[in-house]
Length: 169
Image (cartoon, rainbow, N blue to C red; front, top):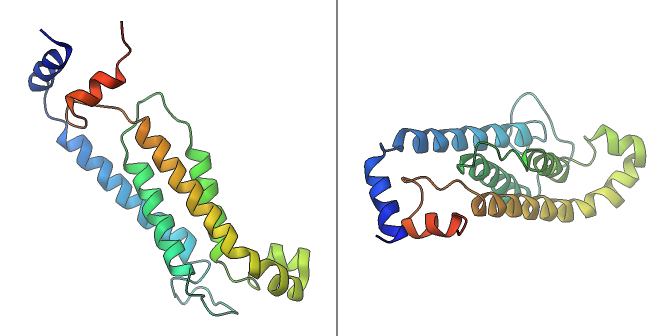
């Protein structure tokens, strides 16, 4: 019996894990929604009565907010091995970086305190698109790494992927 046939028989014998997979997608959607709210509401990219921007929202801030939410949600939705907790602080840090990137330069009290109004508009505002690019790239890399290290379950991977992930004896 080949290793792939053995794994296929194991997969057929084990109970389906569809509820676990569905829960992961719900977790991902919740994380994406939370990420969009945490980044978009205080920066007023998502218009609410709670915050007011002093500068208009720039065109590129909407796609950055969307990509931040989608990539964060994907990262949380990917099933990982129970012992693998790496990357969580990096994902949260990248989301925070995107908040600095899409935020109003004049509304950021840290930037205003360090650079003043002219520095916020003349120095900080021009580097915000680069910060946004770094944030989205870091989130994309985190999702890619998490995907490559995901846990293969009988319901989540093909038999060939399970064979590739098991150590050769």
